[in-house]
Amino acid sequence: MEDQHTHNLDEENLEDATNEEDEIHEKGFLGKLALFFLEVIKIVILAGITIGIVRYFLFKPFYVKGHSMEPSFYEKDYLIIDEISYRFKGPERGEVVVFNSPVNDDYYLKRIIALPGERVKIADNKVVIYNDAYPRGVVLEEVYLEEETQGEVSMTLGDTQYFVLGDNRDASYDSRRFGAVSVDEIVGKVWFRGWPVSRVSGFDVPKYNFISTTTITK
Image (cartoon, rainbow, N blue to C red; front, side, top):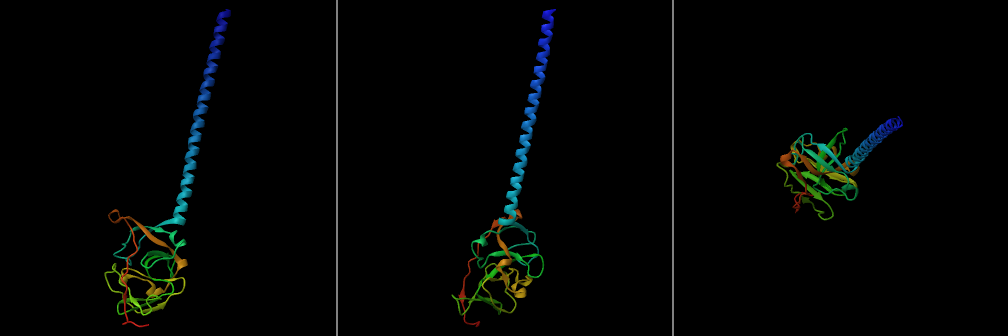
């Protein structure tokens, strides 16, 4: 009887030990699972913060609306805008920029034609730039255009102003109508086109061939 009783106690102790091991194993599994989900949450939060910083302070996506920049950009082109470069240097002639519309709450996409302190004159279907290097004026040749520039404009830009035009001059509402754009209104420059796939590309500043002229006077 004594041996039988001892045997039963041993079985009970063995069963209790097994239950404890199961509980420890279960707790360990749940702990590891909790740690895994905690790490996932941390990664998601950090990724969200990173994307937010990139999205709102460095690069911003835009869809093209309208036809004012054809044939360089077409409606529904998906563009990535570089917002950080202009914190270290000013916009350059020929860069395509996104800026706050001076007439509504929308954004406009145009090309920079004249820089701060310059005088720009549009006459006889020519864009003429006057500055310290070309006090008598220089005709701006624009290889990306498919048509001549219409209108009559004569404007001297302030220290923080830029003159912008659309590449599709006949269909563009630009500085010929609403005047110069302040640097504070410029969001950034076009850096990359991500859609459509057939026209994925980056963008270089065009090289202008200035031709001195004396036919159009100040």
